[in-house]
Length: 317
Image (cartoon, rainbow, N blue to C red; front, side):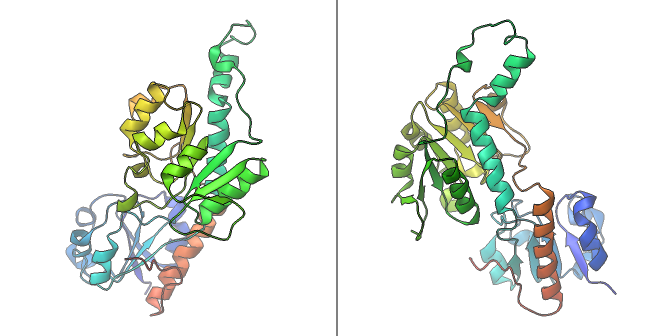
């Protein structure tokens, strides 16, 4: 009999196909588990597949008395109460670095689209303004990449790949992270110092209570009128109201966002602005990344049911 795994999030069927070949999936379809399955079925659940960004605290864990493992699809686990899991002897796993390359790619895409005003240019062509030679202040020349100062906030797997890509564009790269690494980039002792120095702030830090709204009005003001912010981390890292204000009153020049505070709801105030580029949290949404993330999930679940340590266990609690 196949081991049972509760799918505690809404996933497209295509993402679950490989797991269904190995395990018996109890798929909630994103609904409360007790609305879909009986108490007897849920009482025997030992492993759960979750989205790391979704809230999953002790009260939820207590609904499954035999739960021993929560495996996140993806790198993030900010929604999981790690202390609650540890106190219940529940191990938590994720897919570290599995989507780092594709997330770094979308960061570069958003930065280039924002700084070179690609959406504005696209509309300029489609509207007929270009052929009509209609003047547009938004189409004035912008600074290019060579010599541009790029600040990377967070130097994990994704941050390092962003930094390497920026360096290849002949940009200066600096970073702020809790740890100073032996890297060929300038290290700054604080986020404030990094924001004072750079003209593009790349937010790649892991989300958590300590980074809630850390990119606030002060940090945005430090970027200056020619500054940009790009966020591929989590929406919680940026104070969204402060960002809307900074974009509206031209405190900064623009932004590129793949994540938002309350997904999938991007505020109307953001969608109405021409100096912001938006994407629906697609940083890790490539074929290669999904295969890599699924490999990690399969390895974690298989190890758990075999009584072995998770190869990709989240240690922090």
